[in-house]
Amino acid sequence: MLMQLIAIPIITANHGLETFGEVALITSIGALLGNLVNFGTNQTEIKAISIQRNDHNCLADIYNEIFSLRLVICLLMIALTIIPIFSFNFLSLPLVLSLLPLIISEIFNPLYFLIGIEKIHWISWGNLCSRAISLLLLMIIPLSTNIPAIINLMLTVPIMLFNIGLSIYLINKFNIKLHLISVKKLKDKLQNNFYVTFNGSSAILQQSIFMFFVAGTATPQILGAYGIIDKFSGAFRQLISACSSAIYPKAAQLYQEGIQKWNKFRTIVQRGYLVISLLIAFLFYFFADQWAILFYSKADPTITFFLQCFSIAPLAIALNANNVLDMLLAHLYKQMFLVSCLILLATFIISFALTHFLDVKFIGFYPIAIESTCLLLYTLVRLKSNSKHALA
Figure 1 (tube, rainbow, N blue to C red):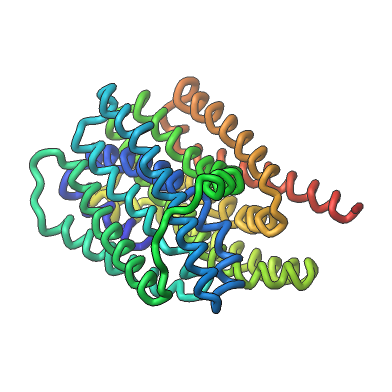
Figure 2 (figure 1 turned 180 degrees about the horizontal axis):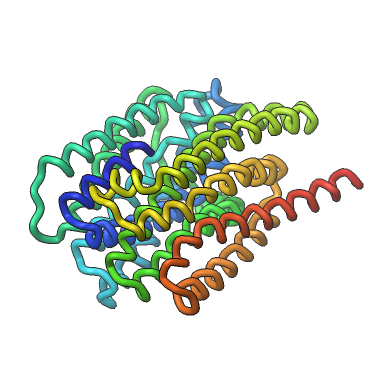
């Protein structure tokens, strides 16, 4: 996460805020497509891996199921999205091709496997080294043409190569023989993971859709300024997601032992989120000018205002994390699907209102508006589900 943020001042200083806005837009599309290829497997398979961690045959079966699912979806994504995007000239060929490493990377991404066997530090250190290589490439390689596409390649190719290499190591270590699963198993997996995938995609779409609205209605300078906020929002979301993934095995164990134990642990985690989020809010609101200079090399009133508007959004993101975890533990996938649909509807309404009816400065209020909506909807659905469970 830190490495991704360090990339911002390098790009803005060397290539300008407008170029960074293009990079932010293309990476937003890539994140959405990568999430679709992942198809919720980083969430749904952790429990099975954790339980079967000592059974190499079961681990091999799970790995092949996930690999087959992701491979098929990746091919579909290329056929249904990347080819049409290029065919209708939405993006140039270099930009389209720069999406491929991130999408391919998700086929091999072993995050779910490593969380399940409690070896997440393997991928953490690998990601750190990959990001460091990306930063080095950004600093030493001069660019003159197709700059946004090449920057995106610099950001995604190292992590793709790392995921492939780590997957090869795991295949050898656990004696996994790769093979494709049956069509029936593939259909079952698609059906079982659909709701979780839609939920994950809606979280990314709520950022991507607004970026599209901003790109279509605002100046490149404003797009670049909001792109910085979008990266901060994505980075904090990744941080909270990493925390949730780290506690998921323990949460699943406590939930199985008794919901009271999980609720006690949940309260401790929630308090930690609250303290960290308030500290971040303080730093962003009162030191917004300094952050703007750090990430743009000079003072910019628009970036400063956007940062102050964003400052409270991490609190809503953090407090909502355990709502999502609650619903995952209780397998409330249909309820998550309903909430995701409502969030997508809210995303379009808020995006359209902020970019068409209000002054451009109100663009900065989008993160807190949409994250507060998410927190409200998830909390209401969780409380309603808990009350039904108590009555039963």
